[in-house]
Image (tube, rainbow, N blue to C red; front, side):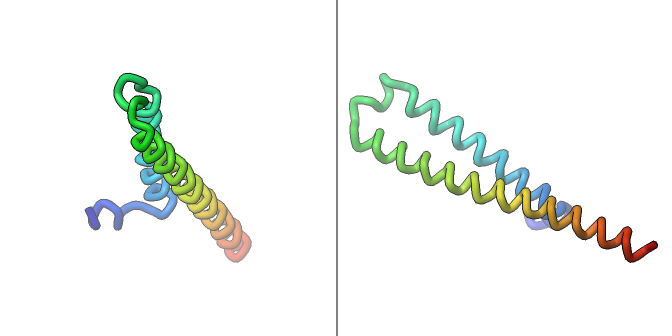
Length: 85
């Protein structure tokens, strides 16, 4: 696992994390939409809803970090071009 991450840049790692969060989000949504599976148990619905809310928060944090990594990368490239001139 470490070798896989060491060859990737920060943006790629965060994009992969965001993708994983999207898959988890879909699984939670599917579970919450399956009325026969869970809706008879209020505690389970509450638990899954709370976890989905936390998952969305984590997803937003990862997305913000990914976007910040892009901004840093663009700024670094801009600075490198200025210095080389």
